[in-house]
Image 1: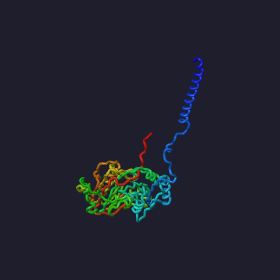
Image 2: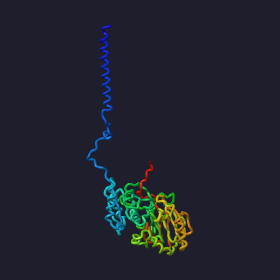
Image 3: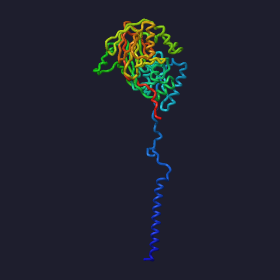
Image 4: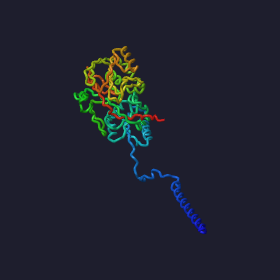
Length: 396
């Protein structure tokens, strides 16, 4: 037995060596599996390989309706539009249509809708913006507002950039906002003047029924017109009628002030206001102004409570007799006082029917659209989609 211990020791040593070898081999094998490769598999390695022939998603398309009378060099303006749009990789080359004397933008906007564009932009003054909005009201196609006029009141009220490149950038990259649209009906028919839809129990269509669809746009009656900023009659319309394009181009919004001074003491007119179908309210007025938003040029706020998306129209009846009365009204407005004044009455409504003893000129967003003895103003809440600036992130 004692002679056999070397053999036993030898066998034990061999077994130990074998065991150590197996352990080392297993350890090396595991080490190689975990750490031999310097790179982990990427996520793309688990995805099927993309076919090189797979087409990229189509680029979005924008139609730009431009008023050429607002530019000394229309070709340069068109080039700026194209360059600004193409600087955004996900947008295709813009479709540019110019307004004409015969068509201030209605037909051009309908053509854009028929082509299925993703966005329609209006470049011009408040009149051009209004015309494009008239067609887009009630559709799902958003609108970009690019100011190039004298007042640019809608852009100012929405806090949009007042230059073409900045306005286009917001239109192409901003967020959608639904805003109200005001509608004016000149000498409405019995059906158009009905207040039936203001009854809470009424479940029919809300006037005006403009019959909008995404391929053609709104289709109101011939005596119905959309407005975005303000509409008015009396002195307000006389100022717009008497201010020439040449004067606006030469001295800007000061042209309206000069014309207003000439007409400040014109004849007053008798009128009766029916607010939301209520009893008539009699006034002897200089002007009646109905607003969708309240800010004017120069930082003046005529209607402090007006909001573009509150579903409400703000109405101001201004009734001064002479210079002293006008001075009181001016101080009241400049002080941004929302309450009434002895010569200024305010109302808020969804609908107002203005009846006149004599026909008066009516203007919408700076454009005179004719004379009428009865004028109905009403609101279509959040009926237009406009592009506004995306909110700034507050993250640190």
